Length: 277
Length: 290
Image 1 (tube, rainbow over the protein chains, first blue to last red):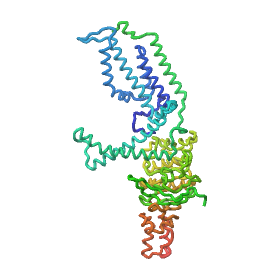
Image 2 (image 1 turned 90 degrees about the horizontal axis):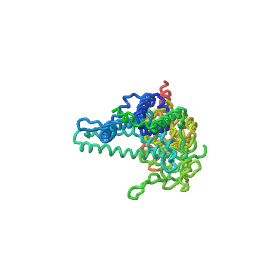
Image 3 (image 1 turned 180 degrees about the vertical axis):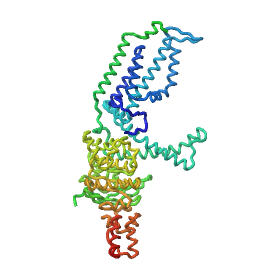
Image 4 (image 1 turned 135 degrees about the vertical axis):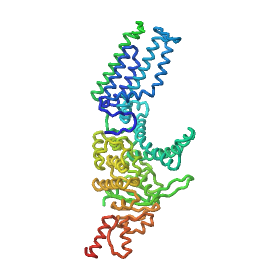
């Protein structure tokens, strides 16, 4: 069992977990496109069902997923209100002195739905079912073609890997420094905000110095292990697309095509035009 | 004796101080190391032993003198990038702090880092990683995260990462100094195993006497010069010279020395605990007929 100590990775045995990380990046992008292609109520109904389907397949508890939506609730409420009062069109509805329109209600609901599907789509494909290291690998290989236009893809991936490797080490170090400063009588919990912020300086300074020293030593150690950039480097784990990757991509492309078709047949706002509001 | 693998001729090195002053660290060191040797370089802090290691691996460039590794002069100005790459494939280094040598977040990925840089195909890397982890006895940790391992285990992973590159010579730059006793023992056993079973030339830089006693040959460095060069038995039979160089004498040698002072006639090698025990036992058998 791999011990994952940070990030949101949720270890489980599901087909989504087993997909190639590159596939998952592509699926996440396709899903984002899907949520923006949606126009009609039928499209959004399909989107809601697809969201439920993905959650079920990924075997991640709903609770965990709802937790990831929590931080953006305020933004969603704000967005919903703006749409509700500013979008005009469709049937008028007056309560007290405030007039809202059916189209406003529709846009408010759909914009919230879109944000939720964005978070769930990227969350499930990129963070819950993929370890950070897999994701780095996937992104490096998927965007490898950008090297041709001089974008240092490998270097970014290497930096990401090293950052992930050193997060726990530096956290441990921070704890040690905090204990050491506490032992000398430093106080981090009392006083005004300014005072408490100032108390952080004796933690940050040694932490930075040590981080730079580590970086220096690591660079030498890497050089001694014959590292000279991504050129001519091979990989222990070579990523390979399998049947499940092609099938899942096919399903997503079909879903996207379906949504576009619904738009083409012009079944926009069916409820509103029929005056059901 | 096989031909010399590393030849050091009259090597000097000086650090640049802030005001343009040069602080000499090594003063004309000459040393030959043959293939398959197990050499301990002994010296107190600031004796220049770590500088020597860094010069051997081209992390530093000497002020004067020559280093020839496997027939290639690594101090020459015309040394190409590729030649340097080739050299680093042959002579690798294990550092002091195990934390600052590990690159990847999964043990096996880290061990694979070296061979990946050398551009081996992935099946070959797989084979090398498994073999290296087996050699250091860490196979069961292949999928662990390095930061959850103990210091000794991390250092063994670092060694595995280096074995996977199949080097001819490994330099240990105080690789045991940050470890607890059990971790140190593990690493020392690994060093010995690599030398005896795989025929890898091992140069260990240390200030621990027991570690030096384990080697085939001990070189004592003091003040940037070679003070003594010989087998552990030769070196540790001169405790006064060691003390003058700011070094301790192994406990067992010290005991024998004290006993000699008290008039107990002990004669023979006494640089390891076993040898020392044997010596005393023999004496007791002879004298008291036990």
